[in-house]
Image (cartoon, rainbow, N blue to C red; front, top):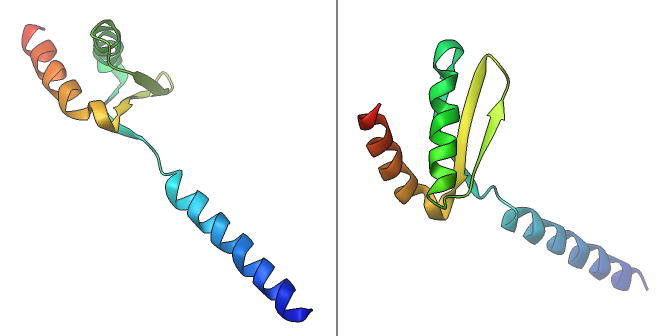
Length: 87
């Protein structure tokens, strides 16, 4: 009976470890700005949204971080470069 409980504990721990390893963040940081340049991050966020890139803003009024999905990172960086060359 002890071996049955031991096997059950091992299986549960294995499932927990697999779930933790597969739930890694799927977001990556594209740009971080502070104070006076926060407006640029906000405009870039709106531009990426209009181009169909899933993105999100994190932070507060002092520091703002723009994140995009990892699968869209290459395209988002290209769009960010073209956006910054226009401004």
